Each structure stands twice: as C-alpha cells, then as structure tokens.
Length: 253
Image 1: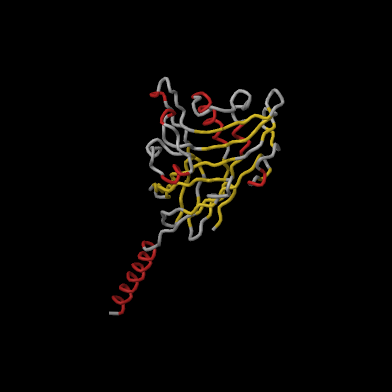
Image 2: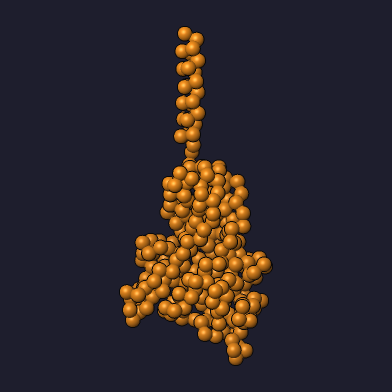
C-alpha cells in the first residue's frame, strides 16, 4: 500500500510541475529605440542645426525623422514561429514612439531568433489600413504606388553652390510610374538574434542615421536630395543602405 501511495505522489507532483509549465502566462515585450550619428547620440534637441557631416563630406541638418517598424517575429527553440501583428511609428521629431510595448503577448522562454521589419511587407502595406498613419500624413499617394512611407528623414544641407538646400530622404517601395509592375518591395527584416523572454523583457535598439548616407552606397545629396519617392533607382539604393543602420544595444529583463 505504501508503494502505491508513493507512486501516486510521484506522478501527482510531476503532473503539477507540467501544469505549471503549461500555464505560463503570455507577456508583452518592449522595444526601445535610440539614435546616433556615428558614435554621437542624437535627440530632437540636435535638430535644425547644420552639425552633421556625411561620408561625402556634405554638411547637413535633421529636422524630422520618423519611421515604421512592424511584424515582430520570434522563433522558439522548438522551431515554432510567432509573428506579432503590432506596428509602431517611431518619431524622433516629437520624441514619440521611442519606447513601444507590444499589445500582443508571447509565452516566456528561450527563442533562437527574433526580428522586426522596417516598414511594411507588401501584404500589410495597404491603403487606408492604418488610420493613425493617415492622420500623421504617412501615407503614399496612389500615383507613387500607394501604401505607406517606411521612413521620412528631412533636413537641410550645404549644396555645391555653398547654399542651403532641402533634402527629403523618404523611403517607400521602389515604384516606376512608367512600369507599375516593376514595383520592388523595399521593407526589410532587422535581425535581433536569440534571446530569452521573461516577465519584463526590453530590447534596446539604436539607429545610426549616418549609415543611410554611406553603406554600401556613398550618398551625394547634390544628386539625390528631393523628389526621391518617385525615383526608382534611389529607392533601391536606400534599401541597400538600410542593411547597416540598426544595431542591438542590449536586452534587459
């Protein structure tokens, strides 16, 4: 009789332990975005000053920077993927959206990879889908392919006539009005790497703005300053330069 009781207790305890694992509550995660020009941290207090120098040795200012991140994707160690359908407009101009907590939750545990998307993939880049982005004037005119901006980076620079001129480094899908079927998706995935999700996980990222102007394509603002949304080739170059702008700073719990 004692042996039977011990066996029952053993299986009962194991069952309780498994129940605890199964009943882990999903948690939200937070992404924080900082910004720099090379090694120098940037905030909105640095805006509207001709204080930055790009790789092409052109002096420029920043007076607006905002961009969308979406599709936070995590791959569990079991191989099971989870895609959170949240999106966030990071607006350094107004210091808004710099810290973003997902509205959807995920089970705590070990994940072999995590990523987010800069911009929207084609299946989500749909006219009128995001009223808040419409209100923020972040949508793209139908004549340029519709959908939404991925980034607006604006400011002034000293041109080759030594005069101040405007630039509008606006990232959208590469659209050729003469051949709409040649539209190329220019959103891209940013890899964060493996991580453990706990009850209070913060993923701290940094955008190095200077990278948009140099890697792998050195950017000449005298050639590519404004009207870039309708410039198919410029959009492809921007997409290539975007590959190095984000870095993981830390993950805290």
